[in-house]
Image 1: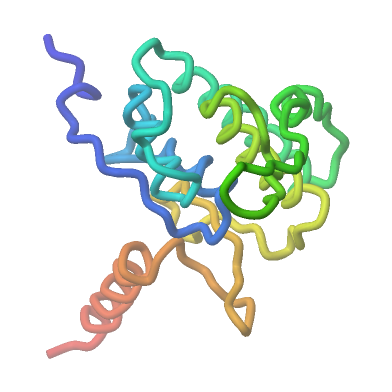
Image 2: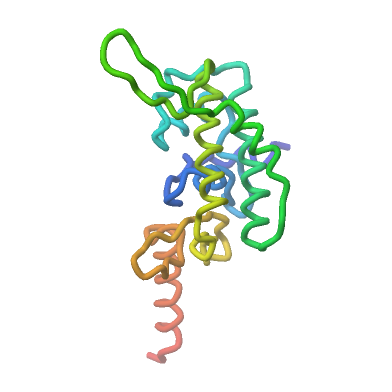
Length: 196
């Protein structure tokens, strides 16, 4: 018998969290009632890193599974630390710090042009991108307002977001997705409550 998880079409990762670390957590989401990993290969991970603005996917070394393994490991440690921060309890940041160790600023001065501050200078592009993502997570954990880090209110949704709305009353991962489903369900309830 075919595994039903393999027969489900895998959606593309959604970029709607308003923070790259939370968007990374959202690469594992509930699809048709089952938790799915939306990143299955180095190519998926490279494309996702490009989509969040961390440089072209073609620059990334892919194919041996190391990039995917690194992204998944980083996602696990970020998920653990964000859960601890939301619960206001201490956690061990050593796994995240391992990603940050090589992400140190350096001045780069090419022959043509002036000097540039490369904040995530590393020899390996994969590690550079993961270091940049780890830094974004570290900034969120240390300086973010965790009253604004939320999970979508839909009971069928596992996505998280950083509420950057002016009123700070965002409830849904996306109004086009869960917000609209909620509105339709509420409309149907009201309509069924009214006798013809």
